[in-house]
Every structure is written in C-alpha cells, then in structure tokens.
Image (cartoon, rainbow, N blue to C red; front, top):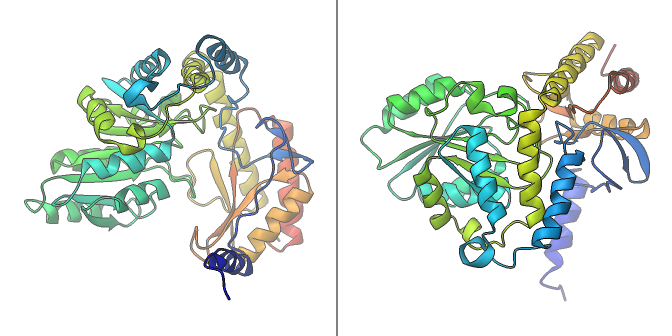
Length: 393
C-alpha cells in the first residue's frame, strides 16, 4: 500500500530525470573569490557578494560587538518586544543612505515583496508587472486579489497601452519591476516607467536587489536614474552586494507605518539578530565611505566582458556585473558547468524552465575581490572548455 507521502520522492525523481533538480554544493568556509566548495579550491564566479563585503573586517567587527552588547537574538517579533534600538538605527541609516523619508527592514528581501505587495493592492485594483520579474514579486502578486496584467520585457509602448486602458476602471494601479533582471543582467528603464506612472497616477515599485551596492555609486537604481522623490517604493536586500542578509522598503514615513502595520511577513516573523542589524549598518557605511569597492567591481566587470567577447562568447544583453555566457543548449550548459568545476571554476548553468529552452547559459557574477590574474585564469578555462564542447570554434 502506497504511503501518502510517496509523492515527495516521485516528484523529486521526475525532476532528476529531466535534470531540473538542484544539487546543493557545500561552501566550506567564507564566501570569497577563492573559496572551498565540496572540498575543492575554486574561483567563485556565482556569488552575489558583488563587493566582497561579507568578510570585510569592519562589518565582521560590528556583528561581533553587537553580540557582546545585545546578545544572540531579539526574543520576539518586532511588533511585540523584538524591536531593538539597533533595528531602528538601521532603518534610519537606510533612509539616509537612500535619500528617502523613512525605511523598514524585513528579515529577507523575499519577505518584503511577499508581505508588502498583497497589502498595497486588492480587489478592485490592478497590478502591472514586467514579464521577467523575480519569483518573489510573482509570489507577492499571487497573494493579492487584484487583477494582474503583464507587459513584454521592458516594453514601454505596451506598458503605456495597459495604463491607458486601465484609466477609470480601478481603485489603484501598481506598476512593479525589477531594477536589474537577475538572469540577463539588464536594467529596467526606470526613468520611462517613472514618467508613465506619474502621467497615469500609478504607484511605482522597484525591486532593486541586484542594483543595491552596484548602481548609482552603490546607492542603487533610483539614485542611478536621479529619481529621488519621483519614485514611490524602493525595495532591496542586504544579501547581495552588501554582504549580509535582510530586506527593506524605502519611501515615505507613511509607507513605513503602513508596511509595519500591514505586512504579515514582518509582523509574524522573529526580528533579525542584533549581529545582523549591526552588520547591515556597517555595510552601508563601508559602501558610502570606501568607494573603491564599487569602482573595482565595475573594472572587473568590464574586463571580464571584454575578455569573453574577445574569445567569441555571447554575453547577451548584460549591462551589469551579472554576465551570462549564452550557450543555447541546456545539455551543453550543464556539461560546461561540470567541466568548469573540474577545472577549479565555480559557475552554474541556468537552463529551462528558468529561461527559455534555447537560452541556456552559464551565469557569471563579478566580484570586487577578484584580481586580474583570477579573471585571466577563468578566461583560459572558459576558452578551453568552450572549444572542447564546440561552443567556440
């Protein structure tokens, strides 16, 4: 007789048969450009730790000191007894960093999207979303009772048509986009979106997870497009370029109060440990006071892209340190990643259904801690394997 939980193994086996399952690798030690993964010394080309801040001495010191002064945990959710002075200091620092009135810190970026989006709109409202938005946005949208419409990726003519057609039909309209799209590394046309939102009285919302610490001298995509005061809701995360963990939303004081009264992911989750809040504050200080990290990230990005293109690889439409090496065929992308690991380079394949069937790629992520010699070694390995697998002539 079949057990009622047999479906778990059955579905996992189906994923494995289609090569759609994740095989978790073990990072043995810190996230660094030179790391140990599954017992092997590798060059790390698939971390979101863009600025190499997760091991910055000032950030680690801030975390250690916070444990000494505030303990290991808060003991509660924020709404009861879990709001520490460190959390409030962090939120003030985020707002100052972003040039906004106020900010609210969430446990993760996913929690910010999943918790806030469903509260901003509901029955009688409309959400308009870019077709390539992140899964956390998609899940947040699915939790609403609002009507949903999707526009083709970065197509402003279609966004305008949707906004024009929505006039007078809805209580509220929310336009939501990623700032930097995580699969291709291209940038949303925020200036055009902001203009359309103002023209049609729609709420503008950006997920800047991959723009934080990267664009606008590290301040993010709103600053990159000079949209301070012209963009409604900026959401982001500390888990990537800032090297720590946690999400936030930034905007008006009214937005902050609305979010912490309405977001159940915020209200019903234990608050971030003191060490995390302190480390996040220190990371903002480092980005502000040590601009060399952002400059080095972009120097590495430009060198890496030029090197790949010189070899004959296609880097797609990337405009950021997210650099896909387009291979087309999923099987080749998977073999390419395995061979890279054997050669001491850790970079993962992105295949269907995460991308279209003919858009498989190795997604590489640049890091400010990589040296020119590291990049040259990685380029040599990419060339060797590219020729070996027929991806290069």
